[in-house]
Image (spheres, rainbow, N blue to C red):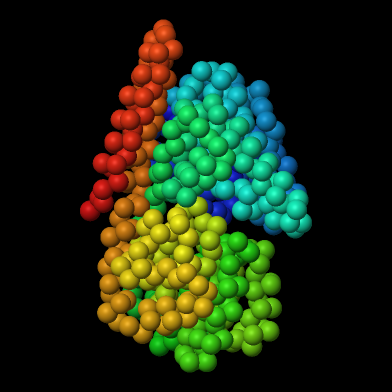
Length: 426
């Protein structure tokens, strides 16, 4: 199978979308499929396989702190190369420039087109305009763009039920199958058995943390939508009772300076440690020195860091959000708090209550298996196969009634197969 992935965001940018694409690319290649990535210039290939095609692009001035780029909507040269490749399926990962190119290619060469809807853009319009009244119009525009983009897709993939409901009810996407397929991760590198106690202690020492001190860990993009400031506000009362606790923030982003200033104003900067960006291959080790993983964001569409933490046997404490409640169940595999003030008790309980810790670690491990890269690969490979089969069948059928009947049959079969593949792979 020859798979074309069309994305505005790719390596070296760090984001959940890029992680999802990397996992997809890695797993499909492992299964013997050919994967071709079409993206913006200034991107890099993560391995030696020459399957990366870059459209001319310029920096996106809106939210430039994320180093995003916007590409030309068409490249005659790359379109010619795509014709020679003979793609079996077009899988777009963005609603903008390179995604539009993918749609054009789909129509031009009669290739089935599916789309993964990663981001609920109306949660991010504050980067464009801080004005509340204008934000309402921008949110409506975001919904219109989302609805228009997926109109011609054979189907839409979302990482969570929350995103699927958003598309269906807020964006008014109708008569279009929406399949929930959470991004899979390679859980093996995060396992605690990969690291010795000495390695953990050495990393703590390099950060100025003593072996016996407890670590409250946040790992991810340091940006306003992650609500790290909410966690920071709780820290003074925690440190007052437990001066041997540290708040470790791993990652970089536009809010880092503001959070450093917040820590100074709260007079807790001695107990708060910012690592800045760390190399990806070092990330699992940072998880494995944490005693509890915290996140107060309510804008996550999936939140891969929660699964990574569970894989590393770090109990999770997070702010309640509908999508998180799909896989985090309080006192079973993590803790979801309804109010910000509840974070303190939950964090301390997880660190101090050994029985609770063991329960959450055990439950988290089982949950992480459901989100393995193998399960992710099984679902996407099945979906690609069925959509390609549908596309070929529609060419052979003559009447609209026959085509609609075939659609219903295959869409139903996809849903049934997805349910079966959702079972945990031991």
